[in-house]
Amino acid sequence: MRLFLANTPSAALLFGTLSLLPTFSHADLPQDSRRAGGIAVIEVEPKTTTASFGELPVALVFEGNKKYAIVGLPVTITTGTHILNTDLDHVDFTVADYTYPEQRLTITDQSKVSPDPEQLARYHREAVEQATVYKNFSPLQVTNFPKFIWPAHGIISSPFGFKRFFNDEPRAPHAGLDIAAGFGTVARAPANGVVVQTGDYFFNGQTVMIDHGQGIVTMLCHLSRIDVKIGQSVAQGEAIGLVGKTGRATGPHLHFGVSLNNARVDPLLVLPKDQSEGQTTTKNVP
Ligand SMILES: [Zn+2]
Image 1 (cartoon, helix red, strand yellow):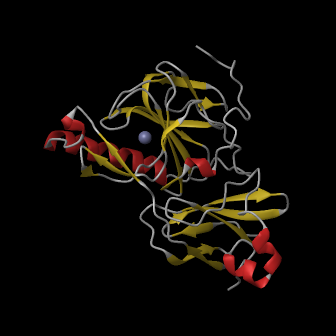
Image 2 (cartoon, helix red, strand yellow):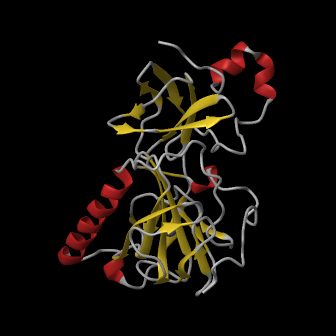
C-alpha cells in the first residue's frame, strides 16, 4: 500500500512549512474537504484506471500530469479512517469531525412536514428514481473535473448540511445549497452534461438532474418551468428552466445539489467563489 500524504494533516507535520499553506485547492479541482458532506481529492498513481469507494466507482481526473480520485463523502459517513480502492492500490484517508449548524423553518403546508402514507409512498418512489440516477456511473468520461459556474445568482438562503427542523420536527440534513434567486430567474446548466432525469417531485418540486460524467450529477429543484428533456445534451450556461417555488419551498429559490459517487456534497466545494465567474448571461435566455 502506498500513502499519498501530500494533502493530509500528517504531511503538514512531516513537512512543517506545508502547514502554513491554505487548505489544498486548485482552480481545476474541487476543494479538498474531508468531512461528512465534503470531498476527498486524493492523488493516485497516474496509471490508475479505476477507483472505488464503498461499492461505487469514483471519478478520476487529470490535473496537469497528475491524477486524482474525487471522492464524495456522504453526510452519514463516520469520522476516522476510510479506504479508497484503485485497480493498482489502496489509499487510506481520514474524515474529520464536523458539526453543521441547525436551521429552523416554518412550513405552512403541514403535509410537506408530515406527509400522509400516500405522500410518503410517492416520496419513496421518487427517492429511488433519483438514487438510480445518482448511482449511475456514465460512460461520459471527463478527463478534467468540470469548472462549474453558478446555476443562478443570489444570496445563499440555506447552506448545505444544515440540520433542519420543520415546524420543530427534525429532518434530514439539507442536501444542497439554496440560492435565493427571484421567481422566473433563468436557471442554467452549471457545466456541460446530459439531462438524465426531470420530474415534479413531492419535496423537490420541478427538478432537472444533469449527468456530467463519472458519477458527477447535479440537481436543480423547485423550478417553475422546465425547458429541457431527458436525453438532451446541455452546454454550460444553457437555460434549463426558470426558478420557482414548487415542492417544499418557503419562497422562490433554486435548490442546487451536487452528487459524487452517490454522495451529496457541499456545492460550495465545486463552485467558484465569485458567482459571476464563467457566466454567460446572454446565452439561451428564453
Ligand atoms: Zn434546498
